[in-house]
Length: 293
Length: 331
Picture (cartoon, rainbow over the protein chains, first blue to last red):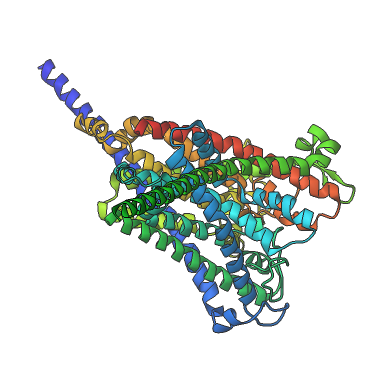
């Protein structure tokens, strides 16, 4: 009799404890769902605000006219071209250097101490504050030359390109199967040709992805350009003069008191975001196609 | 006749051998050059970091000489009298970053939990891509959105609410004192939280996914709930990876410039209230560097940059160390 009561009590408390555990589990699950909705909500809100505020100013004149003086209408042609020039310069400087460094790490010095050190430093450069890179280039290029220039802006961006390219090049070359290298060695191909003709070709999609990601990263960068390329209200394609760039113009126009400038800033922000998102989606698609192959 | 033919052939063979040797030499030289070229590039990456550090040190030298250690503890920032102290900017950097982490870490971990344990398979990729897109949005976009959309909303909703509720609580009331400006350290911290959220969630997803399935199955097998498997199996196993990811996100938050510059208010003052305008190292540099008239002013800003570089170097180095340890364990 007492035994039965006891065991019934035990069973009851067991179900009680079980219910509590299930409740806690349900609460944690609900929280996880809520967190995900919360996280993705920002993407919707930000893109929504960009489209809402930017689409009305989107017209052909944005791409054909220069930045206007306060109070008049105009476009964003010179900052768009300036951004393209500096991005191209940064890629032209950063990609070869990064690729060569990544090649050394994956092909020649795979087990060397140097490679470990470079990888560690490179990872730190990868997330180093970009404004500090701007200060660095100001110190080594702008101050000695005495003026702001597109060249300085491009070099500052190149410093941001290098770590991205080093990282992807090394990772992608590591994925190239060794049997390919052995086959090349067996027919007497020199090491450098093995790397450039065979390994690069096998890793091409991945390395292209790295370059695309680097472009996506630098095309939105503002901080390193603020005091390297500065800004320019007029048309300029000289590498030796201050040059407007889309992010810097967005920054200056958004903080200005003029309605026309603020509206141009929103339009510029929309164009910039769409370009960057398109680039990163393209990079992802490229990588996915490589995986399928 | 035969002799001549033979001689001719011998001659040709010798010539062939010579070209062959020349070609081999050329290849060998090319090989060597390529090897040294790549090695030089790898060393250049090292030199880059050294160059950043040295150039900042040289630029900061006048301010270092003038103010010494006092720079780090003085709040005064007066371009007119040429007296500079970095305390307000350093304080603002730390406060905004920690506010950001306080929000982004739990939410990011929960998203990682959702993506690895709860999410239906067909949804995993789209959500993962959406989160990475959030990471890809340039920081200036967060800035313009924060200033024109987010700050006004906060000014009329969250900030009055915090002032009226938590502002009256004795111990932490000072954190939420003062009028709701909209912009300020809290707003900057919230924007930073949104910005680093993708980093925390994608890294925690990756380290959670690396936990051996057998461990999880064993826990489920003895009747654990999903929440318990997460708390007692996955989290302890993934701990150092999670901490590494958090530190990485912290490094981003510390150095973030544009998003913060828009909404921080740019006031060189240390105030207890999170609602007050402040400044951060990166915002001070972005706002004032081109306007710095005196050499000492420029140098003080570069010294701030040096401080930022050193802080983020330490944080990022710790993050990479922890993440490398995880990577080694996974193999």
